Amino acid sequence: MSVTQPVKISVSKNRQSHAEPLFEAARIALIATISVWMGAAVSGNLIAAPAKFQAPSLTLPVALDVGRMHFLWIGVFEAFCTLLIAVLLLSFRQKPSLSLIVALCVFGFQRLWLLPLLNARTLLIIAGQPVEDSSLHLLYVASEFLKIGFLFWAGIREMRSLFRKARPTAVSVQT
Image (cartoon, rainbow, N blue to C red; front, side, top):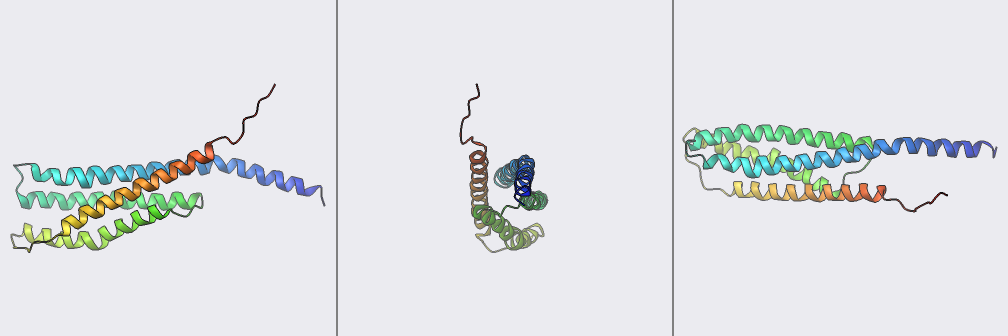
């Protein structure tokens, strides 16, 4: 009976050692996905979106119509990133960090509540109808900064975790 116990232990250790590179690769892919999502949010939502209103040849209705499509496709890409993050977390059985959960919740808030309201206002303006002043755009920008901040925090947390596991705990010298 005692003969089989070391065999079981060595087999389980062997399985763990084969799985470690996969877990590390999934964690690296998670960090990359978080970083790409954050970059898309900054470049698409905070830089490109307001830039179209600087073009003097675009009328307000045309700029708003382009903006509607812009936010639709940025949203599709962000949703793809969230799906990929979920798959990666499941692949190495990790619970999402609080910072990642908050970023996902802000994304959900933007897509499910805030953007439909902004889209309705945009359609009224495109149709030439008057709309009341609103602070919805400021709320969107604030939520975008919040989402980007939490994505940054989640990425840093994941990188620290990766580097912490990669650091050697002891140095062995062979002669």
